[in-house]
Image (tube, rainbow, N blue to C red):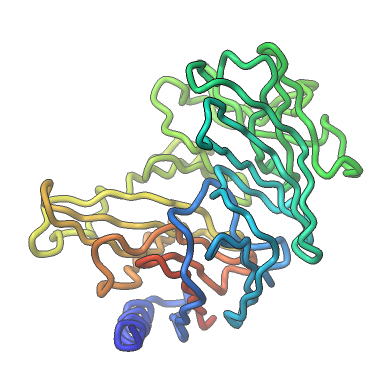
Amino acid sequence: MAKQILMLLLVMALAGGNRAGEGTIEQVMPVAPVDGGMWDGEFWSPSGTKIVFFSGGQLTICDTLGRSRSVAKVNLLPRGLVWSSEDELLVYLRDYGNGDTVSHRLTAINVTSGEMRVVEQYRYSKQQKSSEAQRTFRGPMKSVEGVAYYYRVNSGAQNAILWPPNSKMQLGQVHELRTGKDGLYLAALDASDSSMISHKPYKPYLTLPLRLSPDRSHIMFGGTIVRLADDRLIVLDTLSQLKPFPPGTQGCGFGSESFSPVGPEVIFRLTCDNGHDYALDRLGIFNYLTFQLSLLDTTLTTSAPFEPAFSPDGRRISFVARGVLYLAVRRQL
């Protein structure tokens, strides 16, 4: 393992070193094993000083030096997770259990005290569809403004709920992306207003999740970046920098894409395969203004790496490789 980490560090440093103004990788550190796969949600706390993950049945927090501590015992891997504040997580847990009932819970967890509180919960028979349940919830999610919320659904009708309950924001001040046949909208959660941010009708072919850049100038979905001002497309898997394909592979695709919180960059997992029994997974960063592409590692292959995410300041990267959480530090030039 130590040899692999050293090789990864060297390769990442070399890969980043030929890019002007984007910073090289100066350190890579393993943190701890993670349970199962990851989830749809956030890793970094709002301040960027903490990362959340699950290890050995424990909800675990680590700092930017890789030092970790257990917060609470959680037997179920999350289906979704957001930071509602620097000290609290809102987590969606689903339990199939051993009986005839499926249980869904939306739980608030204090990362300082370990206190857990059920916010919403519903159950239904395994013979039923979840859509048949009278009362459900959808989420948790983060608004464009960075506010945590979820939808409470009763008999098909849904109402947006901000979290925490004492949030100073009002539903009319909190927005999400909504697609329509005539374009893409930034809409208030209470439907009090909406503004069209693109005239392109994305809904017929949109691949979720849809992501919006922090400056609201670009969206990204399924390996495609769109400049909203003129609907210019950047299709990542057609970039000339990716060719020729790595030896033994026939094509490449993108996954786990996310925007940098501070600049015109996206981070992603690039998977190249031969269509049968060989695949090569790598991390990459792409600047969609300069079109600079950098692949950050080439030594980790099958089942690695996954779920890359920038820290709020853009200087650190978290990712999972071969069941272990890693942190990489970028040196700013």
